[in-house]
Length: 179
Ligand code: XMP
Ligand code: MG
Image (cartoon, rainbow, N blue to C red; front, side, top):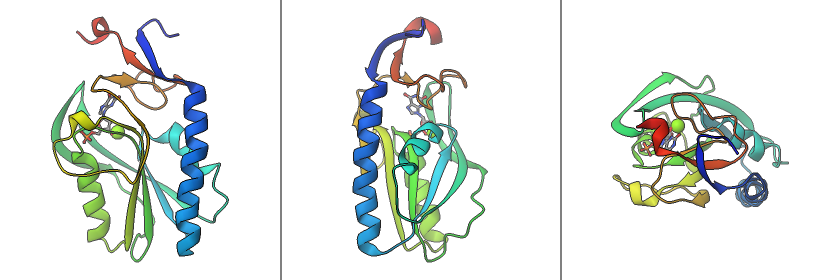
C-alpha cells in the first residue's frame, strides 16, 4: 500500500468485478434501445474507469473526452469551467458521461445540462464513486460503482494535486498529507 494512504476502501478486485456488472447493465440499456452511445469521459479522473468499462462493451459505440474543472485542493469551489471540449457532435445522440466521483453534484448537473442544450436526446451518467453526503444540488447518477463516505479519496484516476491517479485501488489519504 502507498505510504500516504490511510486505508483502502475499494480494492482492485472490487473495481474489476463492479465494472463487469456495470458494463453489462449499461450494455443492456443501449442494446434494448438500439442506440450507439457516445461515451464521454471527464478528464482526467475517469480514464482508468472508462478503460475498464468500455473494454467490457460488445455494442458499437464511440468515445470522446472533455475536461471540466470545479476543484482545487480538497474543497469544491462551486463553478465549473470547460478546459477541453468534446470534438464529436452530440446532437440527436445518446450520451453516456463517465465520471470518477460525484460529490456536490455541481459538475455533473452542469455537464448534463450542457449536453441537452447542445441537442443530445438522452444523457446518462455512470460514476465510479458516489459521496451522497456531499450533495448540494439535486442530481443522481444512473449507474454507480460504489457509495463511499464523505472522505477525500485518491487512486484509480482520483488525485490529490495530480498525484496518486495511478494507484490500482481507492484509498483514503492520510490527513498529514494535505494538512
Ligand atoms: P462535484 O462536487 O462537482 O465534484 O460533484 C466532482 C469532482 O470533484 C472532485 N472530487 C474529488 N477528487 N477525491 C478526488 O480526487 C475526492 O475525494 C473527490 N471528491 C470530489 C472530482 O474531480 C470530481 O470530478
Ligand atoms: Mg473530476
